Structures are given as C-alpha cells and as structure tokens.
Image 1: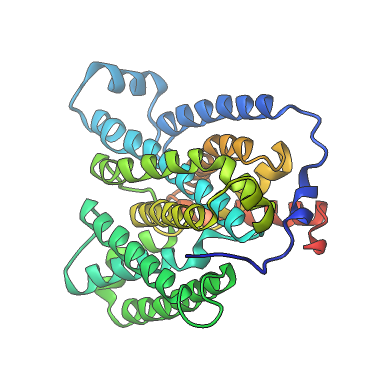
Image 2 (image 1 turned 60 degrees about the vertical axis):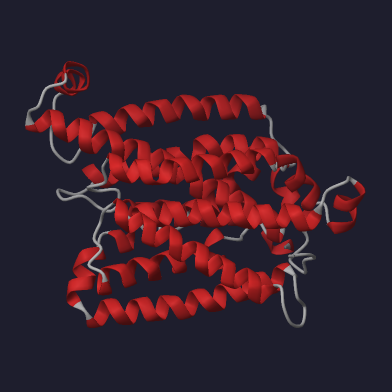
Length: 349
C-alpha cells in the first residue's frame, strides 16, 4: 500500500486561494453556463461552413445527407468525447495533486499515459490496429498493466509504499516506454501514419463507438473521485491528521490510484495525450474556489470539459486545416500556467 509522503508541504499550496471574493457556488454555476455555451459552439462550429439552421435541421429532421451525417455522426460524438476527456483528465489531476500533496503534480507522472501510448503503438505495429474503438481496448489495457507494474514496484524494497517511490517508479517506467514507442514509430512509417494524429492528441474523426468504449469507465471513475472528496481533504492535511479524522489512508490511496489509472487510461486511449489539462484545471480550481476538494471537484467537472471543448473549437477555425486539440491545449495551458505561477507564491513549495 502507498503511504507517507516527502512531497512539498501542502500548506503552502493552501495559500493559493486564501482570498476568494466570489462564492465557489457562483463560480461553478458560471462555469456550467459557459460549458453549455461551449457545447453549442462545438456542435455548430466546424472547419467547414454549415449554416446554423442546417445544423438544427440535421439534429431534428433525421436526414441522410452528407451534412446530416457529418453533424450527427462526427460533430456530436466529438463534442461528447471532449466533455468526457476534459472531465477525466481534470479529475485525474485533482486526485494526483492531492495524492502527492503537490499542486504542480501531473497525472502523467505515474506512467499511465506512457503505458496507453505504448500499447497503442504495439497494436498498430504488430496487429494492424488503427484509430477505432478497438484501439481504445489497447490503450486502456496498456494503462492498466503499467499502473499495476508501477504499484508493485513502489510497494516493494526500500522505502516501499511511499508516494515518492510511486512517482519515481512511474516516471522511470514512463520514460522507458516512451523511448520504445518513439523508436517503433520512427522506424516504421506505416505505424507512424496510423497514429500520427492520435499521438499529438486529436478528437478528429472520433465517432459514437469511441464514446461508447470510454463512457462507462470514465463515469464510474468520476463517481469514485466525487465520493473521495472528503478523504482527499483529510489526506492533504497530513498522514497523522488524516488518521485522527478516521481516514483509511492505504485504502484511500489505493482507490485514488485506481481512479487515476482509469481516467487517464481511457482519456489517453480515446484521443491521445493532452498536455496541461490535468495540471492547469486543478491548479485554477484551487486558485478560484479554495482548497476544499468538494468545490475543487465540482469546479473541475465543468472547467475540464470547458477547456477541451474551447480548445477543440479554436483548433477548427484558427487555421484552414484543423489543429489537433492537443496542440491547442499546449498553447493555451502553458501561458495560463506561467501567469498563475507568477501570481502565486509557489516558491514556498
């Protein structure tokens, strides 16, 4: 079991949101309204020009023309998938930062994303898997296997069970698998061609089968995270305080690790690696709604999907041919993160 942590003191991160003039409920409510607007934009705005009236007709009349199929079979599932992926990565970031007591921790440091990437590359290289729901199975399986391996390594030997060893194991295994993945794709052009859009994070071409493949895992894992909110609050106070409050620390950390694995694995398998979502969204949440994980999770449930949806819409219109959403989230996330770090006293971490 994972226990203990030598991560930077969480109390310094708590100072990020000591002043919040706007009530958290108002912030979350406003975010929900913006999310509805982003969903509408995602359905109505594309790289091609389709009149709004035609979009409404396609959604209500059940036509079989090219534009009808484009909207119902591509834009709609793409929108739903963006919501699911943003929700999954945001929540995974919340849990990862609580687990390590580090507000700058990213869920990818556990090696889960690298495991999903490696499995997808193996599927494409040796089994002919392309961008389909079948690829989702490869990605989730790879994430699960690597997560289990990381957990076993972190639970044995010297300093067994510490969060530091868990993170170091994840980083090491992730680096090795990323190296193998890069080697395979660079030496086999056919593999590179199959996964080149997926490898930078893309929602393009995803249909309802992809949504169906990740819907249940993401929603179940998200529900688990919601139920963990109080336990995460206790965990961030330190091990002794958490025990005093009655938290079962080994159980909480095990369940939290499993939730991160499912959320990251499913999201990465579906659209590829999206950088900064799991890092920036929880960081912003702590900045605007405070350090209570009940509000952090509530904010993340709307802010994660909002970030991915707006990035995807921007990628469709910013250049004549679409920019993958993974490229846009990197462009958006990096400046936001720099601004927030400069505005907060993270040097104390």
